[in-house]
Image (cartoon, rainbow over all chains, first blue to last red; front, side, top):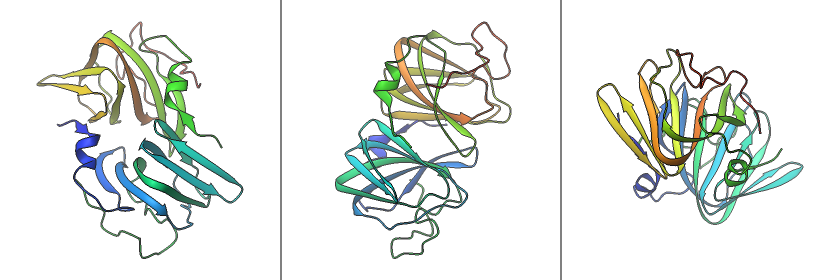
Length: 119
Length: 119
């Protein structure tokens, strides 16, 4: 059983908007992602999604609210709520969500990753 | 819907070994704890437990292994595995575990908190 060093794992990949699985517990996955620019509007009908900013700044647009999340802050997008993440500069995220969660939710996009890599 | 700033939440309490609930998703809770000294040996029969060190250094003794977790590192203690957390200096943790998880697991101790406070 090994501990996981976040910086070390972030050093293993460069692709943006391509979450990597770094841990699993109680049917939930711990995922790391590097993001920059705009993602697609989407929602998850059955799953709440946790975003912790490890480095940078993440903006999450909701239909009626904008949430700006800085380093050391987290936000939970409740199930069923449409959201669009974006980041001006490259931002590093730790995500927590059920193993079955597709990162683009109910939207099939060019960015949809079907077999999420474990690193 | 509000974001959560970890430092701000850690500033709201001083008790050690007394996790505070700061978020909830998919039946799991995000908890923050300040720890120092030795905790009790315990296990959780049905739940995996996630420890992320936000500040300081956490040692988790397992029956056959010692894991030393530094700032920016996390470790998952699988269900059923006996463990004893400890920290020389005060250490700040972010925990992820099912809402029903007692932090002392199967052990009733003077440290068992029955009604975990939400902050």
